[in-house]
Image (cartoon, rainbow, N blue to C red; front, side, top):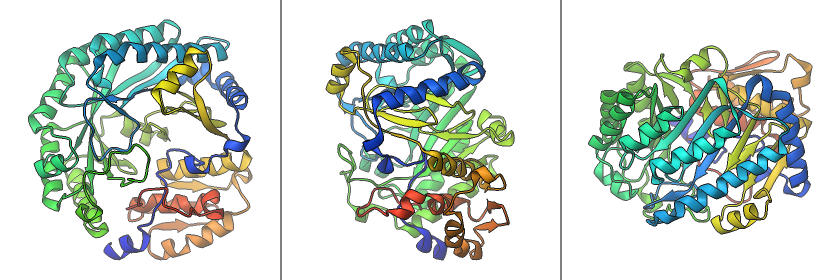
Amino acid sequence: MHKLVNKYNVAGPRYTSYPTVPYWDNNTFSLIKWKSSLVKSFKESNAKEGISLYIHLPFCESLCTFCGCNKRITKQHSVEAPYLNAVLKEWRLYLDVFDEKPMIKELHLGGGTPTFFSPENLQFLIKEILKSAILANDYEFSFEGHPNNTTREHLQALYNVGFRRVSYGVQDYNETVQKAIHRIQPFKNVKRATELAREIGYTSVGHDIIFGLPFQTLEHVKQTILKTKELQPDRLAFYSYAHVPWIKGNGQRGFNDNDLPSPELKRAQYELGKDMLTKVGYLEIGMDHFALPTDTLYQSLIESKLHRNFMGYTASKTQAMVGLGVSSISDSWYGFSQNVKGIESYYNLVNNNILPVYRGHILNNEDLIIRKHILNLMCRFKTSWADVSLYFKELPEALMQLKEMETDGLLKINKNTLEVTKKGQPFVRNVCMAFDVLLQRKAPNTQLFSMTV
């Protein structure tokens, strides 16, 4: 395995979208085209499957130095009301684009730190959104909670408006690692937040664990998994720290590259964690994700309904996903759009009744074909071009490029199908990169992506 890690550990996308953001064609994108693609998608899918809603809540009281998300650090909670009013105004701008009430199937609050906001303000936000929408029968509401500041009141207020899933950022329980990433949270805080959620009635509690953090050892990972086993979260994201300090506004400056584990140690951390999780009953769902057999994420895998978008892996697919708030990304299936990243410019656009979009991409036919293949690989570890509509002209070159991975036992190529083996699953990003014709045509001159291992 060490030889394979050395061989395939290259910079590559995480494929929450295709085309990936650095390859979006902003020159052919416009707000008019974006609205048109969204209307088309909405008309095709709203009545039968509804839409997903992602709301970005960017405020945090302190900076975690492992985080690559868009955030604003402040202790001034007076920022809450103006921000939520702007988000609701943006939502009303989208309602004007639709010609009927949207049916919400999935709603997720991400951050930043959603639990920076008061329980009353969060409940107000959701109630206002639901006034102008209908709910799908199998809707799912979820939010990201900080174990240190998620209170009983937060959990109860969100439960009362339909939330049944919460995920907590754990990262690692070791104090040395926590100090390096500026995220001090004792095990007792995670235990309290997990047990409170279950006591109130949440049906799925998730934990995020990261390997490859500064100063992190194999023993640290082992102890974190043992503590995780004690709490038995329903689902787990166990993923590699993405070291991307070149991104503007990123907080990854609290340590040096030399403080990070080597690629070999990172892979050993992953293998140890994966082995331990499997032994205590977790099943691997997709890249970096595990779940208990009782969780909806596992059920969706069995039923071939697992989906991947800018929220990561989700238990169900909607064709249209609307992102509200600064830096949020929306997806109509036929196009992507991203909101401005600055709060002040966001307020200015929304208050002038303009959708706060600053870039995007409208997918052409080739994009749509490749997107289907990459989704198949990321969600099912296999894809097929038996249907002639899924063939693309550079497929033979992609398959030739993957021959070496086949020789290494990481995948199997048949006449019209490709299947990633168990051994190859940790390298699924590398497989997707061979299908990524935009990446193949124009490799980046500078590092745009985190390492694949």
